[in-house]
Length: 165
Image (cartoon, rainbow, N blue to C red; front, side, top):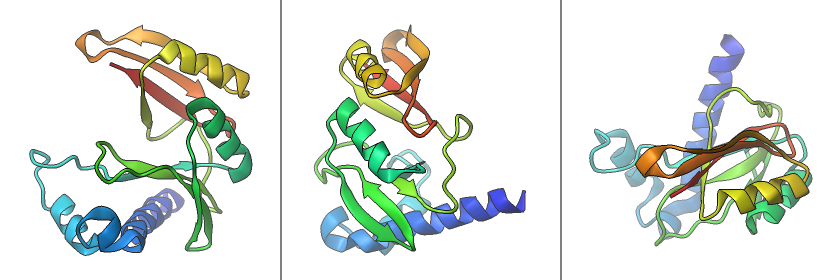
């Protein structure tokens, strides 16, 4: 339990550190202002999640996988002695960004938080997942007016989800 709490605390500190690292130019406000706005919202005016990290054991292999599936270009950074491959961030876009994270505290898993990537065609993405060495864990399934979802295992053994609207 202590290790889990430590991992959660360290991840939160790293995420806040990442926001500080981005600074005012990248996020429009200083990281402190952004953190204040997020932490003092009721959820009615802002989305509460601002950043995610996907644990990896081999960041090079994981970048190759996510690039072949989604076409992402990554920015490499070392943050607090952890190797990070930052997903693209578009200031004028919607949604959040994150990183592939390799370090002592990062353990790929099917358990824990599930990250959903928005896609226009789940069937095509699942084909790319297969070709890149991943596997489908949960097939394309309707969720009514919210579109479709599916889940796959990435090159590192993480469970990752897709949402098609």
